[in-house]
Length: 287
Image: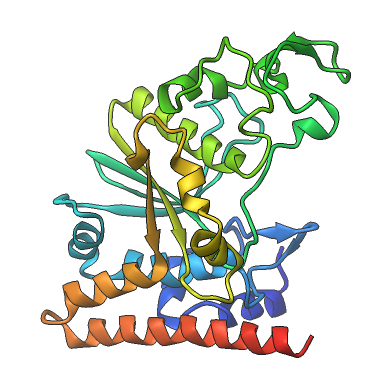
């Protein structure tokens, strides 16, 4: 049971119009840091996900907006947060997708970043592998494989050769997924497995916020972060890139001449996120 003070603190950090996108604040899968919910923190990535995709989810023009933003022509779109399915890759726990937009013909999967400095990396090189993709024995369980996760029957390397230019029988030193490629690889494998299981079009997106105060945005500008994410993909558009800023602009453009009340909500959302950035900037100056 989450304390009401905590629930209210979370609500205070979510764009007011987007609150209705959460059916039950008690049972929602809130992000935790050291086992404490941190979605009420102004730098929370999950908070921004709900700010933006929550407004999209409750919009009476949801289908129109989704089609405009993502160049689709579908109907009956659904939006779900924190989506999991451990059966796809035999994971325990499952890869968790920040946002899923879907209908009967398409599934769009979103990995969303805000104030993170990077994406998640593989934990295995810490204790259970040497950081190379080559045959080795895991000192924790004495299982031998090119990848300690493969030896645990997790299916990443069943799908990696279909997505990347790597062969799962070759030696790759160091493993290309020991660092910040790992989280995106998991999402792409999740998407590929989902597309094969349901025989449906699946697209993966990386969403970030454009501001010099955001570490990943600086890496995109200065360190070719995106280029490094896609350089070994068989097809570069397997991972699509979009900023929150451009998503909001596309939403405003799609709704401006249709409904001024809804249009103004997107203007307010834009200002809401700018305010978050300004607060974080001021906090950083004072530390």
